[in-house]
Length: 443
Image (cartoon, rainbow, N blue to C red; front, side, top):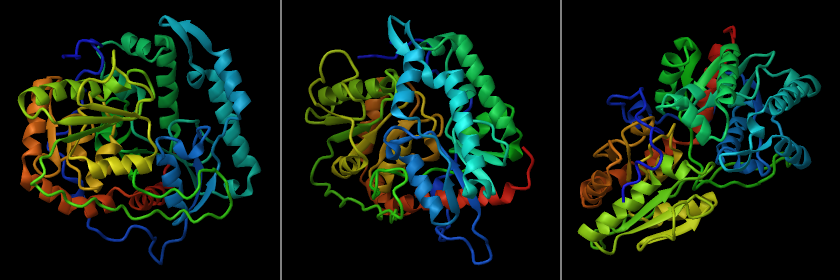
């Protein structure tokens, strides 16, 4: 089964490639990052995010976890936007059109939604005494340009995504928006970036894209790798619930499986925001490689798929595939602990926090040698990287990793350090460092 032709011209090789990126652990000295030095004052940070209806799930739980970690080392005031249910429904209804053969809504790309978010943020900055006293605002994504120092944190941009496709028009159609809407969103995003005091990229790959594709000054761009979500405790699912102990649990590793038991259980985890996300993450290639592995390598090899709400390919799951749908983080963590290899050969993956989640629990990964994935997965140490849409290459790579006892031992031994590095405590400390060091900069 070759699925690379199902969306021709989309998610092609990205023009920005990392060459021999350093292993993330070589950049981390293991020093404590959860507290500021005694001489450092606690900065006052406004935290701006467009919260989902269930706030804890926003940005795959990352926005919630980052806010919790920031609260421990900085005076953090939530100035985020929560669109009431009926207002959200009204925005969706106003922007519903028949496009691509079906009814769809582009409410989250609309000028009206932008105006709503901008007004809500500026109103909070004016009315909330704690917000008025903030040194700077940390904003998740490009919500709005603010009249105070602000920093944007995200994993990708319109420029980065458009350049990954042969045709901007085809990519716009895939997102079910018009090319003019996409161009307007891109121009608006650039305007926010230009006004920002700093742009904090989740990866070195995206940092390069901001400079080389979007024209941002190098001194304005910073890199802070994110933390993992699966395997951490979330004590409360409400946005503002009063004093809550939000300390996260340590990430616990699974026991190292004895080699006497053949390694046969593959895992794919990819949340699906759009219909094309399973294809974008290479889920079709993982299914195709499984068929080859069961035919030529081991008929008992299996693949567990979690993330999409519904089975994303035609027909029903084939032999050897166990489809679980969307799962909460604690159940995803249990999957990492019970499988032998994480496989997600993404055609386009701005970061890929699932790789860090798997590695933090001692599970090797097979990813693609593109985007930020080489910043996380180091061949021969924590897994392997494929270079094409060839399911035969993927199957051969999977078979090689499954048989590599030394790689499994190294990956397991590194797990505590990986968990320490890809923590929101470390990310929050680095974020505070970026903000305090750049508050004197002019937007």
